[in-house]
Image (cartoon, rainbow, N blue to C red; front, side, top):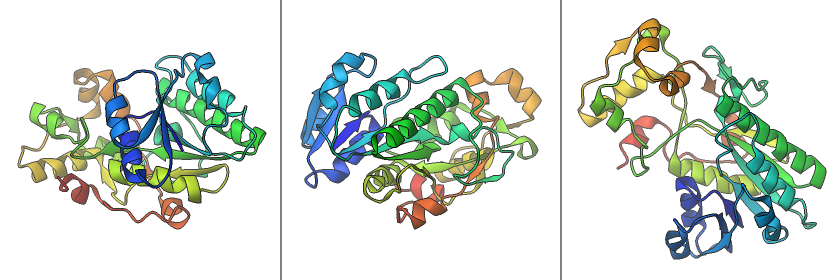
Length: 286
């Protein structure tokens, strides 16, 4: 099995599969090489921004988890295109799982969102992910590979760098008042890693899955809940007009989309039993 993109989630996948399958990881730097070797992972040198370095990937693995982020600028994801182009050189059956983002749905005005909803990516970041999804589908249809897409919302975990709202709460960063607030979705990093692994064996071909827990909260309520758990003051509330003047654009972009993801397929088809069904359980797991 090959992991492409060995950040926090890739490392959790490797840890969960240690000793069960032969693991390989594609990396362009030696930053995580030591930690990967400790998990019994064979290191493959390659750079998604240099397609020629990926030629050796063809035929090396029967199952691939692609978690690498897209290119940081533009409207397309040349990295995913380079990866699937390299993988198409193999002839044996292959399963590919791609970790995308729920941001490809765009703003849904708080509606319940199933995987059949039309994609409407509104930000450059989400459009690059939507482009990556198209390449994954093209790869599956053109090669006969068993390709599936995981649409992932906010990832959290107490043992993940930046994986809790603690720092933001300490800083007193405001959130929107309830009448202006948006619904947000979450998945604990450990449950996400398990979903990635299960998808390799249980996902249906060319299938999309929302990967989220059972929590249904607006963003401000999530921060209030976390503040209460940590014994910190709840964040101040602002009207949207005031927030636009006070908060950075990157943060505002997450406050401009509201949706409630449906995780029925995750449970019914991937048969994932969530270890942390709610953020209350997950934030309190440290």
